[in-house]
Image (cartoon, rainbow, N blue to C red; front, side, top):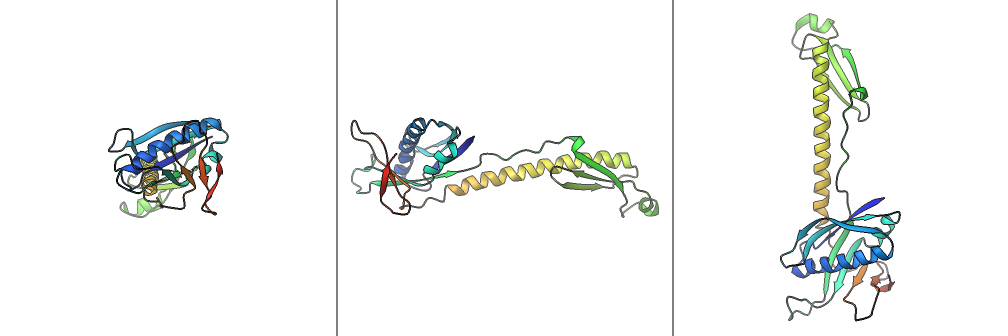
Length: 224
C-alpha cells in the first residue's frame, strides 16, 4: 500500500522552505525506523540552496497509512533562522497532508458498451421518426450514455456513437485529473501556524528521537 504525503511551506518565508528540507530528512529517518519506504516523487525548490517550497513523498508498506497519519497536520521546525540572525522567531511551520496524485483513467473497451437502436425526432421527416435508425450507446462501467441520430442509417450512427462515447470518457478523465490537481494546490493554503502535531528541532550531539506535540494537549507528548 502506498500513501502520498505533501509537505508545503505554504506562503511562509524562506525559513519555512528551509524547515521543509529539515523535516523531510527527519521524516525519512523516522520512516526507516518504522520500516516504511519513503521517496520524493516531486519537489519545488525554494529560493535558497537545499530548501523546498514543497515536496511530495511516497510512503510504501503495510504501515504506510498509519505512519502518514502521525505526520499529518501542522509541523514545526524549532530553530533560529539561518538567514536572519537578528530575528527572535524560532518556530517555522509546515503543513503535511495526504493527497491524491492522479485520477484513474477509464479504459474504453467496446465489449463494455451496450448499443441499441432507437427513434428520435429532428431533421429527416416522417421516415426518421418511424425507423429506429438512431443509436444509443451506454458505457456500462461508468453509466455514460450518448445518443447519435445524425445519419439515416443505423450502422453509421452506431459508429459515430462509439466515437462520441470514447471522447466523452476522455473528457471526464481529464476533468477528474484537473480536480485532483486543484485539490493539491489548495493544500498549500491550509497551513495553520501553531498547534503543531509534531515539533522537531536540531538534535544535540548523540541525541536521537523527535519531540511530538499532542494536538489536544498542546504540549510535548513524547518521543518517536
